[in-house]
Image 1: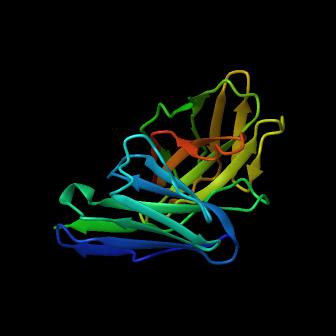
Image 2: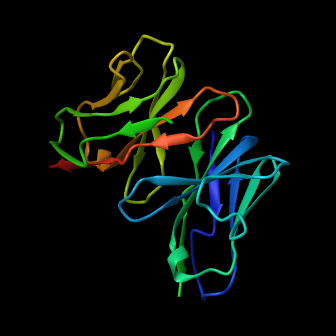
Image 3: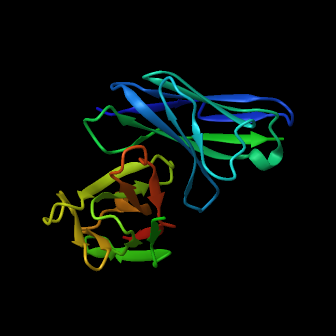
Length: 116
Length: 116
């Protein structure tokens, strides 16, 4: 149980285009989902917290207009990197927490984004 | 704000031996959760073990156990009978129990190498 998927696993795009990453909880309903960014050999940096049906809460320094987060259902959250630039190239990881039954965050397998 | 410190960037252990990874944290809260996550080369974050601060008993999951010292704010992970598959980055993480503050604060990680 508690499986989280991400799609795509890796994506290459041209500078200036937008990229959407999906995060799904496959066998539980996730009232809260989290989006992280991880640079090579570094720890995870929380970008934002999203609750189903409400606006995401962004961490300080994260541009909300650049990293659009939507949590439209209890099993799906999306992160859209708008007008991507090479400095946005990174590993993006989502996690999900169930509704009250468990305090643990379960992580997706991550998405590697390369902006050319 | 809470902080998590992992003072060992790298550790190595002989296969079948025991290794202990250290983690300290700083908080003013009396109740919280602590986690150890493992990130193998696939970069999938995997929950290893978790501890609720109000529980005095140290958590154990098969070959993995923790030494939770609340007064010292220390949360070390012991891996017994190390196996090649244990090679990974290990992250210690803190989570508040406060409503609306569910984010994980991660340490910088410890890279564990298993020597055959």
